[in-house]
Image 1 (cartoon, rainbow, N blue to C red):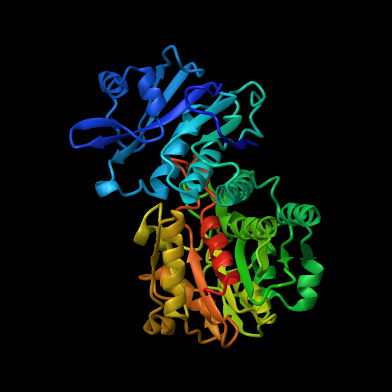
Image 2 (cartoon, rainbow, N blue to C red; image 1 turned 90 degrees about the vertical axis):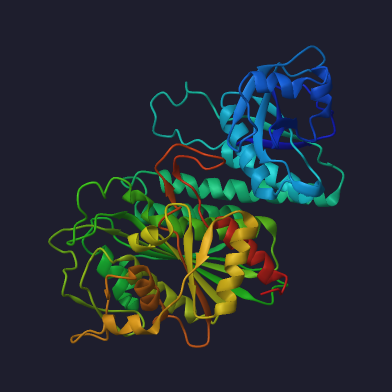
Length: 502
């Protein structure tokens, strides 16, 4: 894991493999950003001109390496673009700094230590740079034969301009490290192949983390699920040789006045079941447990941060496979709530496991429930690959989560729950069908889940199908593969709940 330190050394005097600075566009001119004054001085005030000669423009995502002159202890200077210069002395913005730090960390793969001399006005800036660098330094090489010989992620991030003795700066750095490490935990789980990350293996990972961080973990295996009447989770997992699990992982604080329940979809592999997915849609379906990974990591992060709120995570884990024992289209499942569901499409399985977990979570009467899931392709069609949708039974709560996501740098958008779409799930055989109208499919899924939330409980649903798994080239602090989408939003939600602001 990449180390993080706050250094009081100057940019010119710290020994490191590379020195990271920022550059911005000011009209048609390239300008060196604050924090790099000593570096510019070492270039006799001509650093911007040298970078322009090398083709640098200051655009976001751009990284330009050049050898350091005499006077600097680091042999390499890495200039990362911050975009357009802020107007009227405004700050650069946390997400701009976070992405730039991520670009730098990715570019410096193989380096042991890098000094980051990006603009820092306050503790929030320090946190953003730390978080971006730690997330950008992520790599998943567990299954690569040459992994031990491959270039390792950046070993240490030394943050210049932060104040190690300042309580706010120190706390911001510690929080950034904890959150980034838990996001990377989620990424590791998402990237694991499904032959290794079975429901039982996922449950074991939760138990191990619970033991490490003092969390209470309860695991219901297939026998306990059958005895308890969890027909949704069992119905999805019945076709697999790897039986399902329902995991409860709980963090409690003695001073907590509120409880936040988080429910995560944990389909460790989704073939579609009997309603088999078409060719080209199966290859990345190990990521269908991203919601459960996000919930798991959030609960651990809450414990590491010592938040004064009770946070309970529910991981609904199953493998959706076709076989002679698999649930068929037309079958009727009796859910944990007692409601019956006609399964019209076995590839609409996430809502079935979530429904049981939502009902079970509701029995503990939390102040709010938030479920997270890679639930529908319809949400990807609506919002693209980088934005998750938010639905809720309370407009203010939905808006609050959207604002939180914006604050922490995660793209989201509030979505409605149109009552007229509910009729499409009427079934002549059961209480409800697991499919409704094709148009607005993401909203239909939200309406289905709402049926299983306890009366009077504030609830929100995050459909992270788009941003949970990134198939393209890395950008900013986002790697190829699992992203850890929604963890930052959920952690901040827990913090604000603890503070009594929600």
